[in-house]
Image (cartoon, rainbow, N blue to C red; front, side):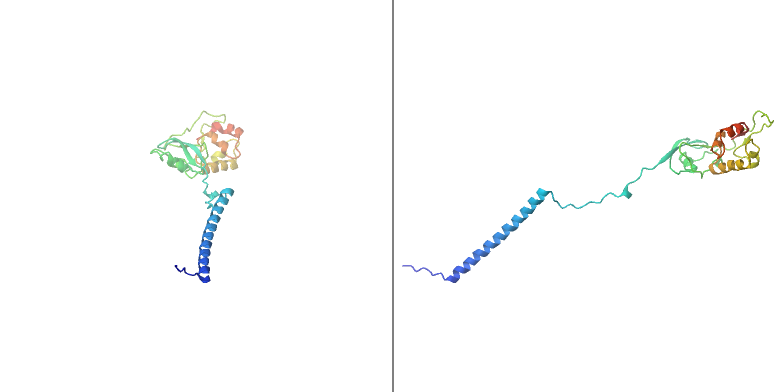
Amino acid sequence: MTARPVQTPDADSSGARRKLGVGAVIVLVLAAFAITIGIGMFRAATGAETVTPGPSPSRSAIVPVPSGMYVHVAGAVRRAGLYRLDAGGRVADAVALAGGFADDADRDGVNLARTVTDGEQIVVPVAGAAPETSAPATAGGANTLIDLNTATAEQLDTLPRVGPAMADRIIAWRTENGRFTSVDDLLSVPGIGDKMLAAIRDLVHV
């Protein structure tokens, strides 16, 4: 008859504790796995997602559309034509776009520092061009026209309806804006209207 080993109470309790420890570890792993799955399902159900915010557009990053204007450059330039200038452009800029002065240009005939306006025509005169200097005799017997671009204040003062103050205004406009390109430019002088222009039109030239 074979003798069976006799298990003591201490051996039984030690084996039970080992089994209990292994079971606890398995339960913890399963619990952690279940928690991870539960968090994923919760985010999917609620749409919650970690999003890294990108840079918001800045107002300073918006580039404004530049405003501009068109001017007609004519006369003694190398490439007469219609050109676009940025707002605040000057006569010098317009002449440069037209290729610069022609060889026969009267370079002092335009005010290069003057600010131009949209739709303006800039005419560069030819050096030595003979201006019109006479006209049929007027009722007063005078037959010499006054050149608006070279006349002195005293000469302008001799025109009808033009006094010393108005003569100074005409010269001031000429200094600021350059040569008169036509007699009608006198309407741009403060204080000169249609009636005054009609009174002096046949007595002046450009």
